[in-house]
Length: 259
Picture 1 (tube, rainbow, N blue to C red):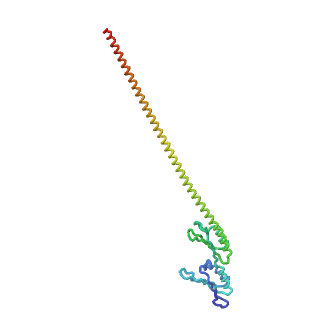
Picture 2 (picture 1 turned 90 degrees about the vertical axis):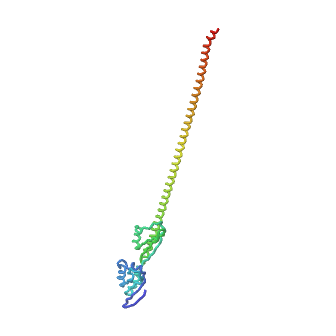
Picture 3 (picture 1 turned 135 degrees about the vertical axis):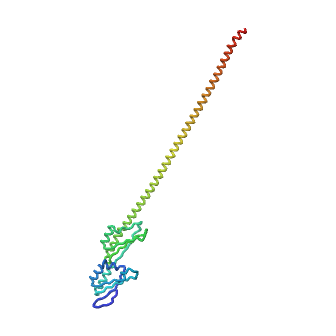
């Protein structure tokens, strides 16, 4: 801050305010800075170069022109309007982004009169939460930080736990299905082996039965053949005996005739 001139108790003060905060101090449509000028009776000028969108050096210098007391009041009010920025980082949340529009966050924003911004540096990195308010609202900014830390850290923790539980359930489900499939395959293999064994046993039984039938047939045929041969031999012997008897009968009369 410097005093440039004094004429009729009027002074011009120049103070450095970061150009990034000029829009915050001016307010929407200039409402905030206009109110300060009306209350202090001073003219407050922000550098015109900051309005240019071209890439050029920005100026931080703000000019206050008015009565000494008014200029001092204006300077103090501008200092009060400067934003107080606090930030904290949330732990890695497994890809979850906290909800800015949740009722709890919006209630903190309205009740504490602050602005909240959340930005994640990248996937797998922590989320930075920025709480912005005026210097005159230090208590509100601090209170908002405490409430947001309690809410967001708790939400992220619960969400992370829920994700872990879901992943574990899915893994257990997949493993269970895999085990069930293996058990079904083993049961099917056992059933197939059992069926094959039964088929083999049936085939063996059939073969044994066929062999027994063949043996019976062979034995029967051999018995019948032996019976037929014995009957033929007996019949031949009988016929030979009959021939001898006939010859004897025939020869007996001849012998008598000879006598």
